[in-house]
Image 1: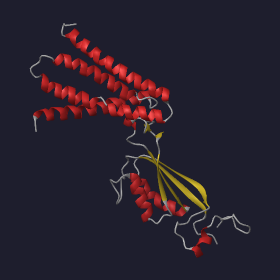
Image 2: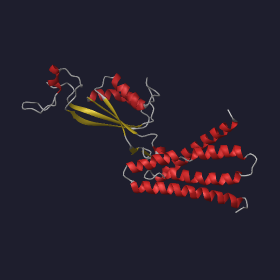
Image 3: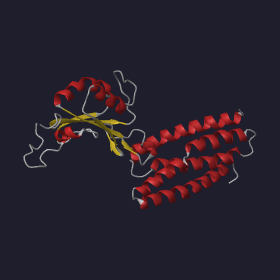
Image 4: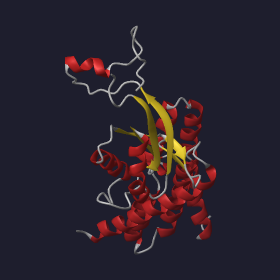
Length: 128
Length: 141
């Protein structure tokens, strides 16, 4: 088994556990009326991946780190399937407005966060 | 004479979580709702029903709901048993050991129908809901 699979597996496991922990903490104070946990996880994970991608560019160990942190950790941390499940459940429950806000915010804020991650890393590398 | 089970009985409701495990006895380690049903069956109870809730909270005020995946891992479960009060009381010591966290309530109910689905025709009259025809005794025992 290529070593790359191990990087991805370990990164993915840590990412999923981090999501579970962060989600539990967020729902502890946000309540269950809106999927705040998943939204924060997806937006912060997108920011992190954008940031890491630029930070790792040009590094000799970049492919391994990209596998571990990008595909593994960020992949296990963010969750498109949970987003879809929760948006679908909101729609099924007749909360179309809330579902619409959730879908729009998730998509727009996640992409904006990835771009912010690029810029943050570029600024830190003095290329901003 | 109506069926022996009709009349004043006790309804026991056991409020637990889907991921609770049985703490004591021969069913230790099994999902608690399965262990409770097996236990009530072994003790010859009249029946038991498990209901799963979609939303709720308990003693820790933590919300459980199937709408948020992260909060759907311990959904509310209610196990209901109807029996005469003496039988219910005899179950309580073992029940107390089996349940970790939860709530148990007892209330008085009146059973007006209790029959198996495949009852013989000549037995059927004993299992009718009382009070539907003139001269019925309204199912009281």
